[in-house]
Image 1 (cartoon, rainbow, N blue to C red):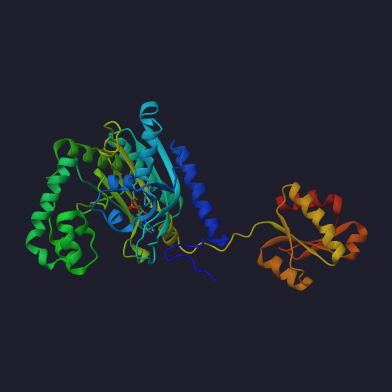
Image 2: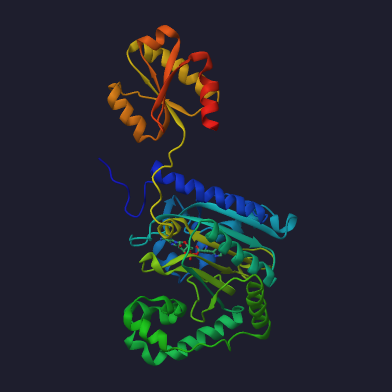
Length: 417
Ligand code: HAM
């Protein structure tokens, strides 16, 4: 027997219903906000991610699933943003559409150490709005994420926001962080000591207690923001205020990917019991389109981790019982006749099924009950003789014999009452 690969999950039918609900709700809300779906491939040139996310990031250093085919290196996509910017440029959307709003849903792959809420194959639901530097689109994107969480009935989350500023400001922020940390280097964990030179931002997210202690003493302030970036951030906050969206400004929120500039944000949920408690996150990446060969243009997006949404939403309810009509046949001839009855019901748009395991009447009734059938049809010798079927209403345990040529109408009327 084979087992699934660690860090992957089988989403079984009783859970799929929750996933379908989330996807349906998301599509509806994306459509209302005029975002269009995009479906890039799951596999890309590995260099796309190295270039976009940054050589020194955890994902590129340790987490990409790389496939080597002859001379070529491909990666299973660890995230969607880089693929979507690639698709935007490769399909000349910068020339034809210029400002576009995409949404996407699908699996992402990161070779992380699997644990609760952290998988090797997980799913994103996200958006990317490419082609604008205006702070109002930051507001729309953050508000959209908030609207989605509310529509998923998820409560108890908070929104953290920060601004990293433009690339020049980010350099200044890097300098401030190094200045604050340089005397305490020896107290940092070995990973953070390595991060000090390569990726100092990551030290702020380290879970090591000693590192967290040191980080808690740093005072970053926001003096590193140039006047334009400070105004941009101010306008984002004013926009969120005007929509009544509650957020906390968090100067230590820096995000783990190199492409971010200016606004960054995270949706955190305190009760997940996870090492990493972000339901989703995002931000601006105003330098990425140019970095990948396109024009100088702004862009912003976010992605939710669907498995984390699932943890926050609680155990999905067992499959909702819906009005299944379940046919129980007694004997070979009835089983044969049953095929036609089922086909007719389905043709009439009635959800119907039967027992294919040759169960006893009692066992078949139990199965119908387990499946949450609204009606059971019993077809035995007597019914066959009369060209009828016994219909048992499972809700109030009444039953009556119904001629086969009236069955569709009878069930349709019962379904309405
Ligand atoms: P990210 O923060 O790497 O951002 O991922 C977004 C969300 O995906 C996280 O907040 C988390 O909920 C979920 N997630 C990440 N890794 C895992 C994992 N191993 N297992 C389960 N869930 C996970 C991005 O990927 C950016 N592309 C978001 C973005 C879009 N920024 C701008 N546009």
